[in-house]
Length: 158
Image (cartoon, rainbow, N blue to C red; front, side, top):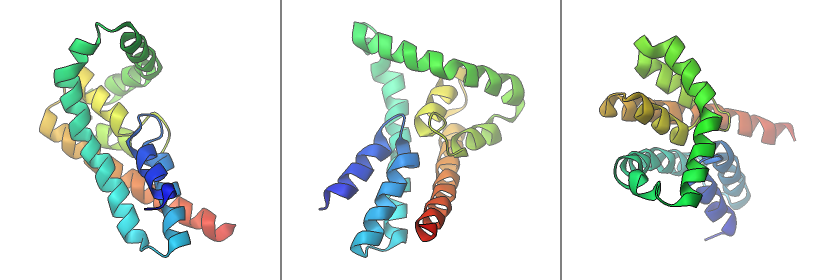
């Protein structure tokens, strides 16, 4: 297996980069190696959606234990401080429209608004889990489509 696709998959599961960085790298691999774009796109989006289950499990089960570790606590507090302003805006504007708002929050193809952040927002606000999973999955799929179109357009331009 090519290192480029492994790099793309690792980027896809990391909290800051997610599929926003992983998908363009994976698409570059697909175009270089002649792998069907639909296959690579599906793999990256599926991996990012699968990540949602892990993040919720982590937040529900492992997070409280890890808060006792100083390095983890500092990282989590740093990440939460960065995200808090977005969470406050989200809650103030969209509290009655949680499902749609959460899907749109995740769908915005910018760093810090992906599946990891969507899970954290849903978890902190106590949103219903099944609806949150669906909203985040829809958001990931929409973000993936936007990034796919943008990346393919950029590749054709250059």
